[in-house]
Length: 125
Image 1: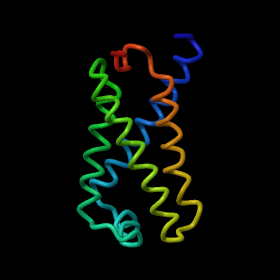
Image 2: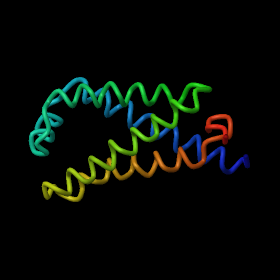
Image 3: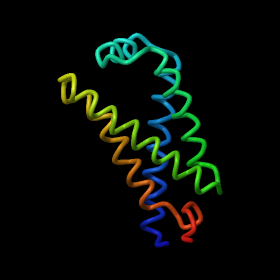
């Protein structure tokens, strides 16, 4: 792996981790802004707790060494959660500015996954 790719990987992964960790904690705290957003989107409130726990566990998974299959699942989960957030906000006609956070985290998810080192990838069978 080239030095440039390692730098891209770690920058994307650190920012992705910070973003997912902070939004996961905020979702667990169920702040008023998150409750209003979930109501607008038509989702049940208990989904905040589920998403918050999954995001925190996903961050731990992508940061720890080894467990490449689990990492694939974490990246897939991040992809589905962020793409689902974008689609949900578009479906209810929410303001475009609300798409910035999920779109940024989606882009960071893709970059981190794409540039991950060989020892963090599944071995080809």
